[in-house]
Each structure stands twice: as structure tokens, then as C-alpha cells.
Image (cartoon, rainbow, N blue to C red; front, side, top):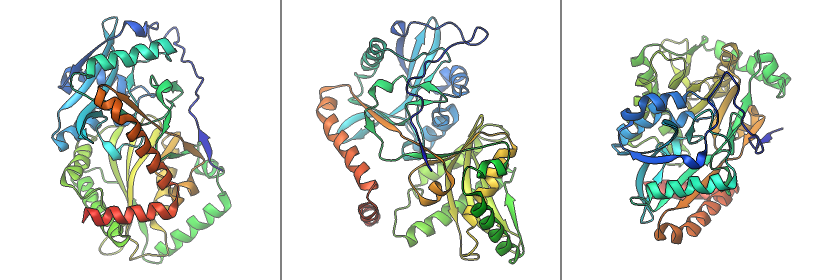
Length: 402
């Protein structure tokens, strides 16, 4: 049974004597705006290493996006006692006639957060109001609306600074499988007997075709080649289903290729491609998954299959088994299937995380449009929770996209 993860709403972070510095007064923070990531790279990378800050706000993820999209960064820096204690990496877009600041990465981000220091404690109502007022002052000259979307109430047990503003649920939720020390212990949370039986059947069917391999090349060129195979597989599958291909734009493909280049040789990485490869003469790739890792958290960014050669073997499910088994061996504690409700995610996951969108108007235009935008978010949520309506909306979107 899926357990909804409300992310410890009442948690209060405590600093240990040997750990982070003593808490500072949030009301004393000052903010400025930067457009050059390299100016704060050292502080940014230091904050990004902390477990309560999302990997999608990491330096490499954001810079790869800005470079691929050719967008100017809009980085909000919060300082206290002479050091950086908060960063909000953003970019400006024109949406519904509004100058809108939002996280880089858009739909390809599975979970977002601000970047805060280890001693950034949960905010009381006064401090929360002060934070919003300070952001308004810093951003208002160039922004009508600040959109902070796809955020949990907390990450790694640390409450979001925007917790009090999280009143609008995001249209999608994300799904996770807690990992144990071994694969046997991990699948014991699921229907272990059925899961093992299906795994053995999948292995036998692929062995009958000559065998298979869990393939994760170290060579960067081979990682890029796998990504191109993924783009082709995904395009074919989406076209067959009559759905739009969100990976088709060249700047999106540049973004993911850029993430591979920024992930070379790192234990934590923005993107690494894994595949299920047949042992036939063509060494056919029948399933691909793109993973990110930060600490003990592994996140599946995307996946694809080519089931023409082995339609009865469920190659995608078999690859997930191999990935989760490897993650257990490597000491990870969470395998995150990411954003979006799909049957295969529910079959693997025991945890469901509710996410929220925060809309902060910064001008009269923003205040005027906020109720309309909130209503649009509610409509999206209703459509996605109605299978018939969602299928119709996807087909319509595909036709409009050409």
C-alpha cells in the first residue's frame, strides 16, 4: 500500500555542537540578484551538497539548462552574518503576459527546493512574512510573479522556508521505494513472491534470445550514444501512442547531453544512462533509464523501451530490478521514480509524496493574475486525476503540437 509522505510538517531542525554554526536571525538576511553563476559557485556547491536541498537546484543542473536554453540566470542570494545562507536559482520567462521568475529545468525537474544552509531553521510566521517581503523587494523591479513549483513541505526532514505558503497542490505527485540492505529485504515491502516469479520469467525469456547484460558504460561517448538511442525510442513510443514528444526540441536534447558532460567521474551525478542490452549480434538495446544520484538518493529521470524484439519479457521492469538491486549494493536508501502517476510506479513504490506550487505576486499584474493561474493549476490537477479527460487532453496536445 502506498503511504503518503507529508514530509514531517512539524519537524524542527536542531544544530549539533560539532556541526553547523549557531542559528542566525532570518529577519537580518539581506538579498541581492546575480546573473553570473561562477560568482557564487563555491558557496552554491557547498549548499547543494546538503541533503535537504534538491539535486535539481544543483550548480551543474541549472547551468546545463541555462546554457542549452541560452537564458540569462536570475540568482537570488540571501546573506546573513557575512555568508551565503540561501540561494534561489531562477530565470525569467514571459507567461500569460507576465514577467515570471521560475526554477530552471521546467517540466524536467522532479522535485524543487530553495538552497539553504544547515542552520537555516524553520520559519515562524513573522520570519516567513519577512522572507516574502525581502524577495518582493529584490525581485519586483523586474518580475511580476515568482513561481516556485513542485516543492515538498520538507526534504530530508528539513522544512521548506516556503512551508507556510504551500496551499496549492501540484497536479502531479512523486513516487519512491525505500531501499534496504539487500534486494530481498527491499522487495519484502512489496509482493515479494510475485515479484521474484516475474523476474525469473523475464530472465528466462531473454536467455532464450541469447542472454542480456546490464550495460552502463564509463566512456562519455557511449553515454551520449545511449542518450541518442533513448531519444529515438521515446519518440517512437510517444508517436505510436499519439502523444507529444517533450524531448524533441533541440535545446532539450542539448540540455541532457550537457548533463552527461558534467557528470564524468563523480560519485554524485546529474545524469547517467543505464541500459538492458541483448547478447545478440546487434547487441540490441531494449530498455534505457536515465538516473541522477545525490548522496543516498537515486532518482530516475526518464526511461524508454524497445519491445519489438522481446514483447513478452517486460524489459523495462527487468531493468528496474537490476537498477534497484545495484542501488541496494551501493548503499542507497531511496529509489525515486519521480514525478507523475503511472501503474509501473505504483507497482514498485510504497511511498507517495505530495508536492506544492507557490505563486508569489510581485506587481499589480501578478496580483491580478494569481487567482486565474491558481485556477488553471486546479483544472490541471482535476484533469490528471480523471483518466478519460487526461487521455483526451494528451491527444489534443499532440495534435496542436503537430
